[in-house]
Length: 428
Image (cartoon, rainbow, N blue to C red; front, side):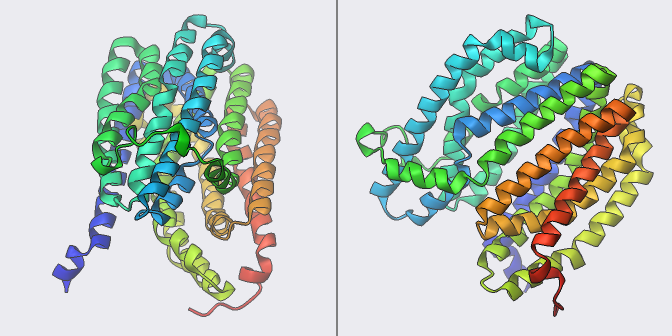
């Protein structure tokens, strides 16, 4: 029986994905230590701002089409003509948007550098590199979406593993040589690595560029993809934008090192949150999509709360008591003030995970208007809470603001789903 289980595709994919997640976490640990040693809190603040800018830019340049591409490629896997139309439509759209954005970014590089990095205009060269590399990013998104859409999950995971390793090597070399500037350039150049790795795993029969044709451009496909991404796009753009604004306000109010300390606690949180987000997206989200009746969705959601959520709470308690060891392991003594942020950061993360499964229910059932409204309320709450508490408590205030925002979001979702999931008995 064990041999049969090991030989199944599901076991192989799940195991490989677990390896991918562990490698990503290990790389995150190494990167955090390297950045802490060679860049310090002030440099980490700039890296955090730049990551927010790049995340928002990717959302705009690709219109968050990734999930839609996967869906339509998968649905038309046997229809080569339709695949050609999808590829032509997406690639031409991406290249046009990237071309326009590249010109704008290059032209306003000094202004963007000021908004992201402050008064030191030496970083404007980083923005120019972003402008040049942007088309590569959109092409890499298309490539990995095609592979995913064709059901080549092992190739997707292998591509992620190889990309992460190559990015790590590139980053370590550049950070060692050029410190903060090297770290920023390494982030800007990531799309170049992704294009070559994803192109290697792209099925050769796809022949993306040979199939490219203006005649095959189909506006109907573009419209369908855009409609599909409308739920994801606002969040993909607004989340990095508000985080950038909050970090800039924190830097202006409490100093640039405070911005770096917030980025440090965020990196720690991302390390353990990746486990939960992976479990929810790979296991619970597909089950929510397939659930036809409310009772089916209810059982999936309460299965999460009964089996996964308590384990996460225990994990956060362990993290809290090990916080000094964690900070010393990941960073340097300059980052010890981060230990004071753990309590409210972990409270906020528990609330965030509690609401995560309900947010995925909105996505699974394509409840567009509520999802966008709740996300907007969440972002605005985070911003105004952050401004208020940073003014009164400084760095400590930003993690309290995050906890309150996650509480507000959870309460809204619980009220919205109260009749479906919280006011009726559940059978296990």
